[in-house]
Amino acid sequence: MSGGSPHHGLVTSVTAGTPVPAAPTVPADDLGGMGPLVARLGRAGQRLRHADRARPWALDTAVVVLVFLLFCVPDLLHALGVISGGGDGDGPRRFRLLFTRLPVAGMLGLQTGLVLPLLWRRRAPAMAFGVVTAVFVLQWSLGAALRADVSLFVALYSLTLHGRLRQLPWACAAMAGALSLVAVRVSAVISVWDALFFLLSTATAALALGLVVRIRRAQLAGLRDRATRLEIERDQRDRLAVAAERARVAREMHDIVGHNLSVIITLADAGAYATATAPARGEEALHLIGDTGRQALGELRRVLGVLREAGEAGGEPELRPQPRLADIDALCEGVRAAGLEVLYRTAGDVDALDSGVQLTVYRIVQEALTNTLKHAGAGARATLAIVAEDTRLTVAVQDSGPPGPAAGPGTTNEEGHGLVGMRERAALYGGHVSAGPAGPGWTVRATLDLTPRGGAR
Image (tube, rainbow, N blue to C red; front, side):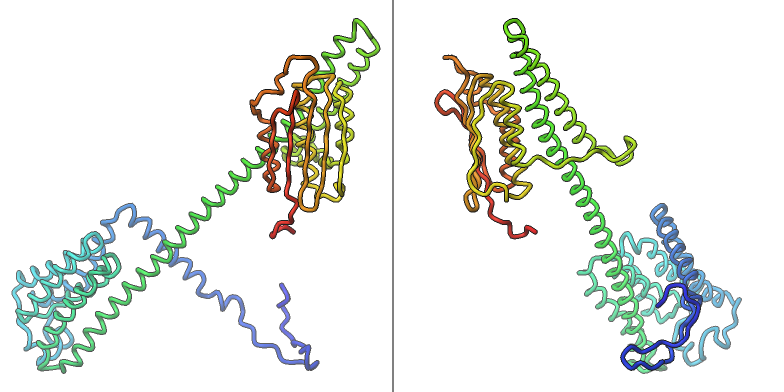
């Protein structure tokens, strides 16, 4: 269908190539003619449910009053003589002679016993049905017929809808017995089987209606529960995503700040020492401190800029590619400038590695060299090796320890956030990280699994 075209002409057949008359189109107004009525009924039903939740007794009282006005008042008016007994007021004469004429007090008592228990039809449906059935059997045992007998079918419907399903068998048996009594009483006028067919059909309709409404309410409750659980799961996924992103940003911040501050501190110490003996070396250290600080500030702005919403700072944040293995040379140069001698070698086709693997390796190397610079200090020597073999990648960083006889803090077994971050990064690729003393120095070894994942794309 073409959107918004008012013309209904000929539809061209693609296969036959001949014009075919278009199917008659029903105006939208005719299709939606029931729309306003259905919408009004839906709103009325919703308001009724809200009112019922606020005042649950009001609806039950309204049902009792309605049954009394429609089915009890006519019998009372006839008993008082307000309505004549001819015509349709009380049925054919032969049919009237079958039943006992009750006094007004007795009729009112039986009507009360039939109608009043409907007040508890939702709170105690089994009790209400039992009382109504007992009064119904008593009434027909006396040979009286009342229009208020419709309360028995209302009670059966309420028991089916609000009661326990295991109570239905005995309720149906009691209903069948009571209706059989009625069929026997009217057998002089109507065949027992015809009477039973009519009465049991009415009872079956009440039972079926109660089951349909009950099943529908259970389905709606299940849908609401499922929607609630899906909303909770969505919120949980959002919170987990936020937590994972915070952890990732925290690792990036730790890697950036920790590495660059370690370089700056080492350069500052070396510059302060060289100022008195070699002013040129001190000036060079200050320049390196400035360059390292500017680099760290730029990376911090990049990370924090990604966290801001677009337009919050007047434009998109400046984005740069994530570090790769090619950037390790520059990383080593910065560490060498701080006084740490680094020997770097690679083996295998490391340039063909996935960008995520290269970022992970870069961050592990950055953290390992930062710890070496922090604990071994300037004048130490570190060996960095990255080896790619088939489905396995090994990263090893080994330092010679701090110069002098005293062991530095790098020889301790204390684990900080850096080692935890390295292990988390390696775990993303099915790897592990080990760190410990090796002779006078310290060794960090990371192993990553390069086997393609089954769900990778």
